[in-house]
Amino acid sequence: MRFGLFASVVLHLAIVGAGFILPQFITLPDVTSEPYIPLDLIAEAELDLTTSVPAAAPEPVEEEEPDPDLPEPQVEEPEPAPAEEAAEPENLPEPEPEPVVEEPEPEPVKPEPKPEPKPEPPKETPKPPVKKPEPKNDDLDLDALSQLIDKEREDERRETPRDTPSQTTETADRERPAIGAGDRLTASDEAKMRAAIQRCWNAGTIIGAPEPEKLIVVIDFELNRDGTLASSPRVVNELQINLSGNQFWRVAQREALSAVSKCAPYDFLPVERYESWKEFRLNFNPAEMVGR
Image 1 (cartoon, rainbow, N blue to C red):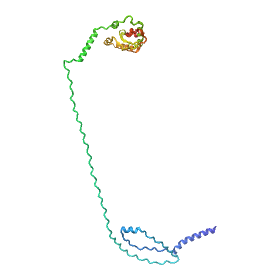
Image 2: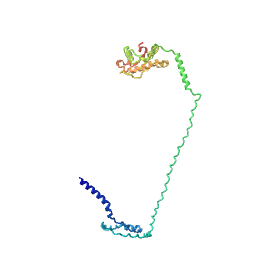
Image 3: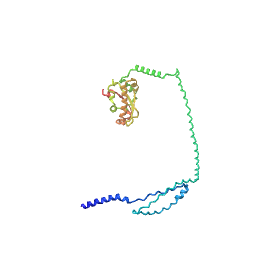
Image 4: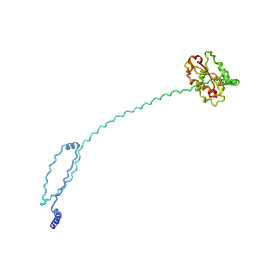
């Protein structure tokens, strides 16, 4: 163990001593400077020729390692040759100037033709208003004539007393054409007609009317053999109703016409007595319809 440690110390000391002693015995070769070679300027054409042919690379010369034991001979350094004046460049031919390419002049841009202005449409001259001919004084005044007729009707209505329901019925019976004894409508057939039409009567429209027994409506209508209406029902006392100005009477008239049309066909009437009921007249008494 001690021997190994001793040997290690001696070996390290020997290595350190050799590092200080050996460099004194080793000499390095002197570095000689290469001589200066002047360069001449050559033309580009000659440069292309020289560069086109690659020069043969010289074979490397093995340098003999100097013997470290022998002292190297001292080589006298040659004095540097005076720098030769740089050769003046040969007169090179001036390069030919490149031909100037004349650019074509741009064609002048033709101005776009301006659109022709559209002719303005001729202004329509306003037509002079046509003057209406003034009515002559000798022409009839329709408004005045209408007022005069209305006044006359009003006077006639005031002078003519209203007919009572009995008078209305008598007048309607006188206007009705007479029917022969063999063609007379039986009471049962008439009762059936009244009962059928009463079912189609809207009694609510007359409720509240003053004196409903005076609002009698007399209607004529014609029937076919199958009981259908041959023509539209007609109110016999229509003029009297319109002149009365009674709104309830007009409602009774409208409801009577509607009831006759709604209840058709009257197919319960006997066909063998068609001549007796083909023309039918019926007196509508609102008081009887509402049960008063």
